[in-house]
Image (cartoon, rainbow over all chains, first blue to last red; front, side, top):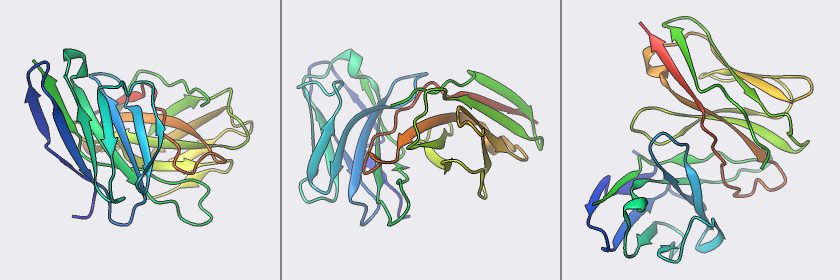
Length: 117
Length: 113
């Protein structure tokens, strides 16, 4: 399967602990996105990478959140000192803009469901 | 990003067509209309997109009003596997290089056997 993969699929942690999620995009996709989705809501954008450069961050991404994409391939999203309000599905997507398309299609992974007790 | 308005939910019978409306009265000339859907317990998946002309692919058809202030996603023969939340999203073509997707609440489609 050559789709976007995320690990772990589920994470349960206690409030105050740090957690890290990993995303492996589709091979050769140079763009990678993180979104967060709470129950009953649509996904909300968190941050975006083009290759290894983090080009955009949402105001939702507080200073407890950090994302990296060190070699322009996989990415990690770390949440420090987790709070109950961080409980959500964290989705990763990747894309690669082709010539003449005018826009690009994002391919999503299955998400990591975080529960903070 | 310009906003979209969709009904919260729609019901359909299996093997009947489903027409999902989306209003985007503040759409700009460079906004593409995208549709994604999210099946239960999965990440969103791309369905279709268009700019001005109607579009067809293997999943669905997209009908765009002449003034572009509204569009309709058409599932020609709904199956139980089409039960999902469908999101209508506008993306600025000029800023499309890596631009985020801004999801609204979407339309939850229920398909009855």
